Each structure stands twice: as C-alpha cells, then as structure tokens.
Amino acid sequence: MTKHMIGTRQEWLAARLDLLRAEKELTRRSDELARQRQAMPWVRVDRDYRFDTDGGAASLADLFQGRSQLLVYHFMFGPDYAAGCPSCSLIADGFNGFTVHLAHHDVMLWAVSRAPLPRLQAYKQRMGWTFPWASSADDDFNLDFNVSFTEAQQRGGGFEYNYRPQPALAAQPGEAGGGEGPEAEFAALCGTDTATFQRDRPGMSAFVREDDVVYHTYSTYSRGLDGLWGSYQWLDRAPRGRNEAGLWWRRRDEYGGEARG
Image (cartoon, rainbow, N blue to C red):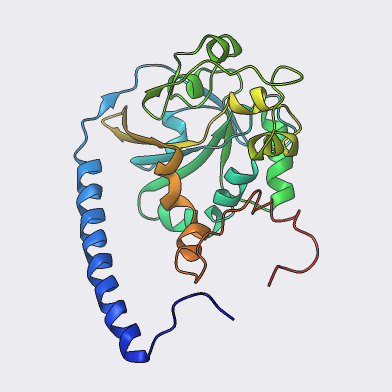
C-alpha cells in the first residue's frame, strides 16, 4: 500500500492552486534572472583561440558562422578519455532537435572538448549527433574558461571552478586517482581514472560578436546547467522526481534490455 498522502479531488485542487502560485513566482523570478544575464557587462576576447572542426581549423569568430551570438557547451571529453562523459552525453542528446531553431534565431550552438577531433567525430557518429563539435586539443580555451585544469593545478589546489577556488585533489586509497563511488564509475565508463576524469568539468559559455569584435558575456557551471538538461525538466514533473540513486543514467546505447517500469 502506498505511503504517499492520498486526498480527494478537492484537496488535490487546493494543493495544486497553492503550488501554481509558487510556480508563477518562480517563472517571474526566472524572467528577471534572464534580464540580469542579458544586462551583464561584455568582456572583449583578445586571445586568438584556435579549434579543429569538421571544416578545418577555425577561430572563435569562425564558430559564429555568420550569426551574432554563440553558445558553447563545454563537453567533458578530455584528451585521455576513451569516450565522452555520460552526463554530458545525456545533455547533448537534446541538442540535435533545437540547434536548427537557434541557428535561425541568430544563435550558433557548439560543443567544445579537449579530445582530438577524430575521437570526437567517432563518438558523435556513435551517438547519432549532428550538432557542431570542435576540438580545443591544442589550445588554452578550456583552461581560460575554467573547465579544465592541469595535473599540477589539480594537485596543488587553488584552481577555480564555478567561481570558487578548488582544493587540491585528495589522496585516494590504492592508486593515485583511484577512488570509489559514482565519480569513479563515471571515470571508468570514460576509460580513465578519477583524477584524470576530474581534470575536465562541464559548463557553458556565451559570446557575442559586434563590429568584428568577440565578447564573452556569460558562463555557468555545475548546478547552473540544470536548466539545460531536458530530461531533468521532465523528471521534475514526474511523481517520483529525479530519483537520483547511483548511476541512474547511462549513455543511451548502454542501457540494454527493457526500460525500467
């Protein structure tokens, strides 16, 4: 028998109307936050970042492809990974459908990772993705936008992620970079150890191009990416929510068998 509260239709409606008021307030607050994002000062990007793309070598300005706005998803696929991060892969599964709509709204969406381009292309083919994906393997783009770190930074501590200094990597039992728990399992799914896996982090950054000058306008990391997870938005409306127990998601070609009922 269920342990959840059971009520009448009238009780349900009263609770729903209370929730609706809270949802409307959240929507208004979200609209205000969007206005605050758009009012942020722009910072000129003076570095000549270079990327490898399907079309050849490209600059940051080239990624705009004639649009005035550029959104970059910092996809966790480090140079020593054998496959992309499962979490980033879950987010990226939603990109195919809306990139064309963004492109027709003066916005280009790219994923950028540090892995070499041939490895990104192979993974992209495996996952059936069509959105543009660039490699920053020979560039400091990811380092400058605080989504990757050197081994020396990682061991010395003090590098920044999500606008906070990060501590040095804690010593792990057994071998360096080992460890247990979900992060170690994710690292294993990427064919690497925990320390190597953690040298890349997820995030997104926004840029605008005006009068042939590129400006950085916004970046967000960690839980700031929650709104980009299409699946999260659906699960938050499901009766049991996200039900985040262990590795509750996989790459979509790794589930196997029937979906859990």
